[in-house]
Length: 121
Image (cartoon, rainbow, N blue to C red; front, side):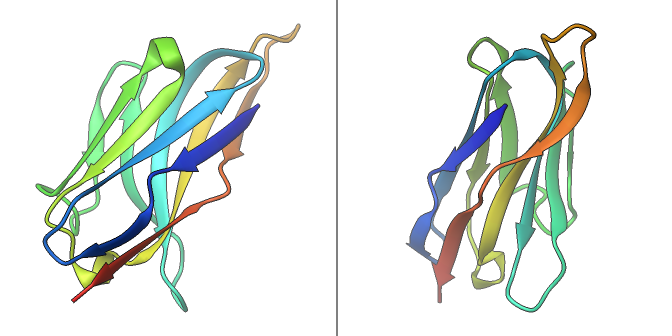
């Protein structure tokens, strides 16, 4: 299973970006998809979560500005980021808990390679 993020870049404060996370491989289902971020010199932090049932949860620092969503048919997740602030600057990572199509099926966490988001003031 591979996760590939895209959509990062440089944006001015107040701007928007939409990150995508495309999962491929022997996927039966994606139970949970998360977005994490890691700023230089800081620990990786959980930004947003979406379950297979569509329930979402957000870090307090992004509530009301970020929206997580998923397209289960495409095995793709998204993070819409609005009203971006310089403190949102970080490498953003997609993480997914995947149930494989193998026999027996395996539940395993996978990570993408990360995408850089830089917000200028």
